[in-house]
Length: 254
Ligand code: G
Ligand code: G
Ligand code: NA
Ligand code: MN
Image 1: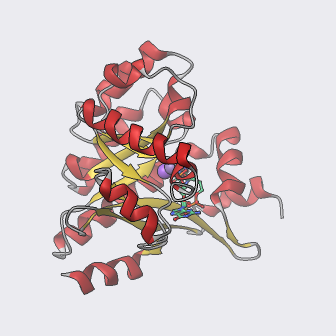
Image 2: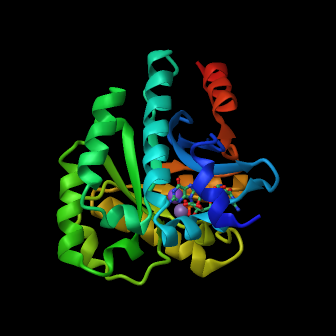
C-alpha cells in the first residue's frame, strides 16, 4: 500500500483518531491538561505511527486538512468533556511547519473556537523551535496573532533546537516543554539533571510555566518535584489514551 494514496483517503474514510495523554500538576496531582496525538488506523497497515506519515502529509500538503481536523476534533472533544462536568482542562495540539506558514492560521483557529464554543484559554498550540527559524519577524507576528485570540502557546521539545534563547523573551509564549531526551536520564546523568534544573529556572525567571515530557519513573518525578517543575506528562502517569479511556480516567478521579 502506498502511503500517499492511502493518506489522501484517510480523512474521508474516518481512519484518523486522536489519543489524549494527561498532563499532571506536580503540586496538586490533578490532571490539568492533555496533549492530543494523532493516530491513523489503516484497515490493512494497522496502526500507522505519526512518524511514518506526518512527513508525507507535510510534503504533499495533506497536513493542512489533517491538521485542521486535529484542531477541530480536539477542541470539540475538550468542550464536550467540560460540558459533561469532567473538568476544565487544557488541550494541546501539535502544529506542523506548513500549518504555521499558512496565512489562514489565525483565522482558522478563531473559527474552531467560535464553532466549538471552547473558551480560548483551554486550547494550547505546541510549536517547535524549527518553525521560527526561517523568518523571525514573521514568526513574532503570527505568534502575537495567535496569542491575541487568548489561547496558550508552548514550545515543544525544548532544548533540542538550535535557536537563540533571545526569542524566548520576544515571543508571547506561555509554556516550555522539556524534551524527553533530557528527562530520560536525570537519575543517571549529572549533566542532563543539570540541564533540566536550568530549564526550570530559566522558565520561571521568564515567568513561563514548565512541563517535563517523557516521565517514566518515580525517581524522575521526584527530581522534577524537588526542582519546582510545574507539570509532567509521561508513561509513569499514563500513556496517550483513546477518548473513551481518557474520559473514564477523568470520571474515576472526580
Ligand atoms: O504520539 P507519538 O509519540 O507517536 O508522536 C510522534 C510524533 O508525532 C511527535 O513528535 C508528535 O509531536 C507528532 N504528532 C502527533 N500528533 C500530531 C499532530 O496532530 N500533528 C502534528 N503535526 N504532529 C503530530
Ligand atoms: O514530539 P512530541 O513531544 O509531540 O512527542 C510526544 C510523543 O511522546 C507522543 O507520541 C508520546 O507517545 C510520546 N511519549 C509520551 N510519554 C512518553 C514517555 O514517558 N516515554 C516515551 N518514550 N515516550 C513518551
Ligand atoms: Na508535542
Ligand atoms: Mn515534545
